[in-house]
Image (cartoon, rainbow, N blue to C red; front, side, top):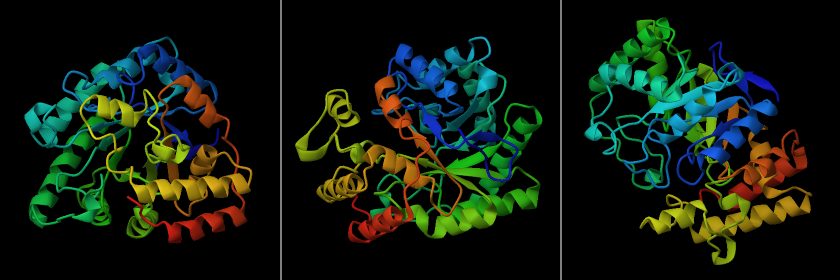
Length: 352
């Protein structure tokens, strides 16, 4: 698999990343380790995790299990040096630290906790799961309120965090620093603060991006290109919608929506499962069929054609799903198909 560099850092990773957020919930340890073995075997060496995983739903009793499962695989002889590990510190979350927001001191401890669960001495990319200012991610774009902390409070917080991250990099615990669910303004300020303090530059930003959700295309893409920041695109299949498995009222057993509903949730995939989204999925499936593409393969391959640095993060509930995704690696949509995708986007823009 092609290798790429995260932003302006020296961290080289595979051009597609394997997400691990289902490990310990939908995905048991045996299947998780089988997926990791398969990914490493084909050169998909970039693995993304987080201290709060697994999700769907997030529960106090499962927090940290994904890192632990990944850690037991990393502890096997030779595995750690085959892969690059990314993880994240969560924002305010009642399942961790009683909801206390992160600062420099908390980050220092959280890094050590993640290293312990991962059974490793280094994390290749350490990310802030979401900003303390709030974020328009997770469907909050419809009523986002940017009032809150003053500019100076935000800048002071950034300086404190960068000091902690700088120390961890100096100690060899971290190699690169990244953001997640950030805004264009936030990304710009983090880059400015790094220049001002001599702290680590932002190497990546992990935000949602898919055929159905293209908010990144405008301000954030411009900012990231100018600042040499790589997008780590999560939910490239729109939480499974683009696979087509939820069409016509279907709710497959063991699927993300079904598991959420079984735990008392609405089963709407974090607000993604709307009538307009299902209509858009039908349109993309018809387009894929016209051009001889599997829709899952098209959704991932299209990401690699975008005019900015972009690493899609794919996730699989089981090894069979992962094998399906792998079968599409290496294919590139034609210019005609890419134009048709843009035309469909104008007809079905932001359907959730």
